[in-house]
Amino acid sequence: MATLEELAKEAATCTRCDLYQRATSTVFGEGRPHAPLALVGEQPGDQEDKQGHPFVGPAGHLLDRALRESGIERADAYVTNAVKHFKWEARGKRRIHQRPNGTEIMACHGWLEAELAVVGPRVTVALGAVAGEALFGRGFKVRDHRGRLEEVTVGEWQGPVLSTVHPSSILRARDDEAREEAFAGFVADLVKAREALAA
Image (tube, rainbow, N blue to C red; front, side):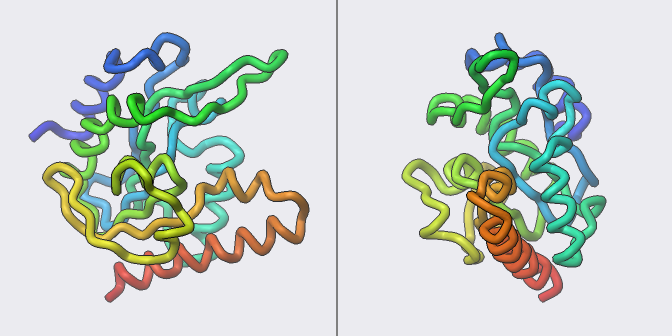
């Protein structure tokens, strides 16, 4: 079985879908080999694409805060995305996130399968709808699965997956009160993941 370093090197030249053509970098997963917890996001954002690391932009900072408040050390987790290239459209000088389609999610699925097989997490957290679709299949809706631990098989890996929102959705909340409420719910979901690890 390939190591995470070998997989990341191979993924850096991936052309399985067209997203690589406009991406600055392939953003592969990072974290401890054999971490007990895997966090699967949707796709890299603007900052992740520029820096080449997962969850280093605004959503990543919010995730770090939520992990701290839920009693999880990010250093104890393996952090990755379902899709490894940033899908975007230009709006003036800004690059605006676009949702990956089913074909793009499936094109990247082999990388996620390989990562989970190597890491072998005891619990995986699906952050958002794209991550949920990659782990559960098409038709996934966060509201139908949120906060529940459900047994899933992804390639050679099998284990419990807890679904929750993507931290970027919290940043898009309409006002401070809505953001705080959404953040508290997100932390509560992560606490369930921590408790599942301790069980």
